[in-house]
Length: 222
Image (tube, rainbow, N blue to C red):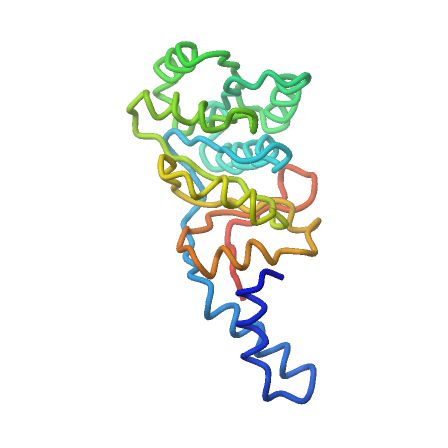
């Protein structure tokens, strides 16, 4: 547990003698300290998902695409894999998109991405999946399009303090929301909890499990 968070929690339970009320007080203190607000899942417009490698961005894109396709129809949703050169990344994007019946496209450079956005501007929702490699460069390229685009940080619940700093201390990045992944895999969420006590970035969705239907639209910190 980060030192600052540990000190906060220890101070709050010093007067307790039993474990159960102390745990209740820790829960209350965490909920009170976290500057948490929530926003709805992206359902229209163009949205970019970014984050560290292995955070679960592609699966989160597939989950959001499936959620939107249920509401608007699969023909109203498109997924674009942008500049992801990892072996098998494009095949994975195609397979995940096929599960919900939405169209998937590949943009290897910013010019191709711009053309795809223009071609599919009539769709209700376009989701752009990005690579964790050279993330800042890819985000800068997309921001250079000067379009109305939402940017969302996909963060595994057990992300380290160093990972969170890399994502959120860059002043070039303006995030629309945070998306939490791998709720079922985490048993050390302390760095994220510490971050949420210091920042007021809203959380839009969370996910757990391996199915594209495992999307939590309402995220409560209680």
